[in-house]
Image 1 (cartoon, rainbow, N blue to C red):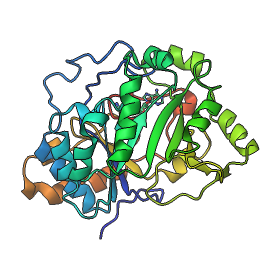
Image 2 (cartoon, rainbow, N blue to C red):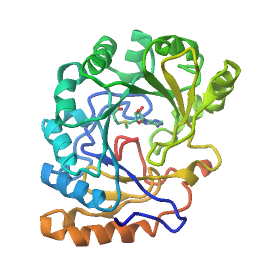
Image 3 (cartoon, helix red, strand yellow):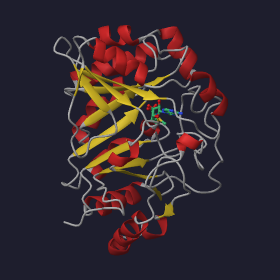
Length: 328
Ligand code: SAM
């Protein structure tokens, strides 16, 4: 089978597919004023058939893991059908979603039946009031019930994303660790990333994941080996804990050396990096099943332009105004 490979010999097994820019939360670091319709002009989000064709093309190019993201992907009424369409490809063995969790309690069993294999839920605080202050939505209890429902539906492990913010949750490690002591949850601390709209917040709240890493190592947590389609986290485990801790540190030297991910935006542009470029349009090749060969060639050709690293260190977040655009 052909394999997506770039000029730096990195192989790409993992596609992050955004299926909507719309979000119902107003996280301080992402869409503090809420989603504003109209940013796309008259462009619509990818249809179910377009998503099916993208999945087929990537599956035939060696992709074994797809993550559905957004915006809030579960806002799509056809979300369950989208899961089934991506899983029509046997090569795609892992199909994950990143969600704010507000629909989990109601729908997670149906998603699992349709073929969803992994879930990441974003929870920035275990304190209901602080959760509300960060997300703009008083839905902490609902999201927690959703995580329980996901376990009941048969998911054996759930990942929880927490954006690490100085003065907000950077001293809460122990309460998160208590929470995962007897739960098979992988807590993932993501360093706050600078976006076009989030410059001021970044200056106030960015803190290196190093503060967490030091505490973990001091408490006997050990770094695990990484598999080829794993995401960017450094994962730690501890014999006394059922849960694990992942650290995502995009500002760390060599973060990009292990990049194995490509992204497609909700309007069908291929992005070679979360930060940086305006994307390679794929949409004109998504109208008909007969365009598969051309679509594969455009994806493979586009990959030749992937840069060695992002330029976040220099404060350059490229065109990325916030992460609802191509999904963090
Ligand atoms: N709506 C879904 C959710 O809440 O998980 C999926 C989309 S959201 C953009 C994906 C992830 O990106 C979330 O875990 C979110 O916390 C993270 N994120 C958004 N903006 C970020 C930023 N500036 N720095 C770091 N992580 C960010």
